[in-house]
Image (tube, rainbow, N blue to C red; front, side):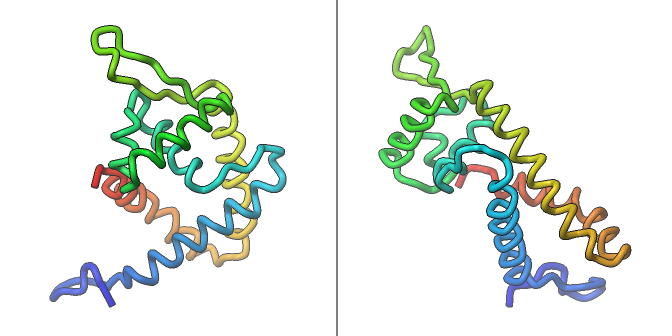
Length: 157
């Protein structure tokens, strides 16, 4: 078991395996349960991950997306083409260097992101209403640390 903060003087060890499993289970269940009610066309997980990278890093290149996700350039390129065809991503060539193509989310992509994030929040609200008040407070208090952890995981490999 990998732990963080388990050294002397530490208040409590974190079971990283349990944390990872909980995060993945929550993510899968939230996406599955909330997507059904949005009317938004479901995207394959691979495309959704690419789209989220582009939304978080507008102007990123296909090579940079592939690097961040640890995927083959050719596979990411095919999925980006599908996102462009679906009007979720635009490609912009650099005027100075025509080889450089920047990726940007479209207005439709932003609309879908807003709809999905609201549905995800509703799904979590319904589930968290079953928690004890102290448990909801613990989750609330941990949000800044989880957001910071996510930012470190988002860094290129």
